[in-house]
Image (cartoon, rainbow over all chains, first blue to last red; front, side):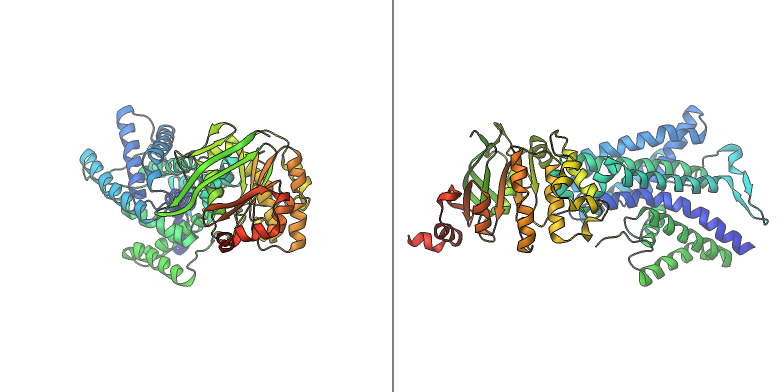
Length: 288
Length: 238
């Protein structure tokens, strides 16, 4: 039963990792853009939610209504003003610039909020649990996170699969040059892709703040988990991202059950095993 | 015929390498102009300049009276130039129908719709949901042309339509050209196959090493003169 519980908690944790990874996967999938500051943006969104709650006293989950649109807008503007200069060609410029952004962001957060570990309390929700029979119960927050992750991935696959904008974004991923011949402004499309990714980052940040402790230096480890989830799942595949997140979460949960010190290591070992056995990931994007 | 596209003295570069030298070129309203030349003569480069894929700011290039040199591809597409690119360049993760629909993203109204394109190339109707990568070369070429038509262009650029296709397939694709022109669309036909180019066009330009080596009405140019202009050396002797 303990093992079953460990697996179950791991699955739910996978939802959070999938949320971390979705934004990263989207940026890479559409723009071939590697964002090393991804984890720091998530943590920055978490601090923004904290600040908003401190200033206005609004309920933590309500900050989503502010943070998500604000992040989307910032994502669009940031892409148009700065990131478009490094998108679409070589990978290296995006890696270098976002590495720099990561350092800047961590230090700004350190200046503004100190190195203290923080958490956003969602009141009764923090301790609420749902009995699912057989003596197993799941926390309301992890469950909420998991369902949100499925909702977000479902929404993204609907946008990509069924809407005109999604069609343009897939085409941009295939062949950014020819998309211009379709009357579409590539810079605007990249802006939209970044806005979508940033909205998911905002969502992940607020939920991270409610789920667990965070501090200005906790971005890189989130980035690492996000990367592992993306690679395990298969580059550019949205549902693969969820599968990757879940596998990573379960590996960590089972590792922690064996020995608490093994939690993170077990995740990395599974990641390495996947890289060796199935380097294209669990659900690689179909390309012929 | 009034000139729809007017280009004079066009130079184009890839870095330090000059690919086109002072090209003078025009296409009239409703005209079909063939552009022939050997590999590397600059045909595809010329089309890249026309569509904005290769930016040539400040050069003398007008479309329907408006300067288009230096405009990005999406602005030129909206102005009414569409291309079926060399190698088809379909979007592999999109179905046939989705590829066609993207062409309509240009947002120009006109007679070409999903329905009329499928009427032109009936095989696209039955393959509508198929991933574009699973089609034969000829079918892919039909999608590429259909996608360009969906933009309802005033000028359609066809780059190496016949490349790698069986003659019978090429004939069936070229059979669509009179129907396309019937709507008043002007066409620039880039071909390596001279006889095909002469047969389909009103006028012909031959490019050689980035220069226009021959031009004139297709009916007045005999095969020998075109061959000479195509391969170069002989014109220098003449």
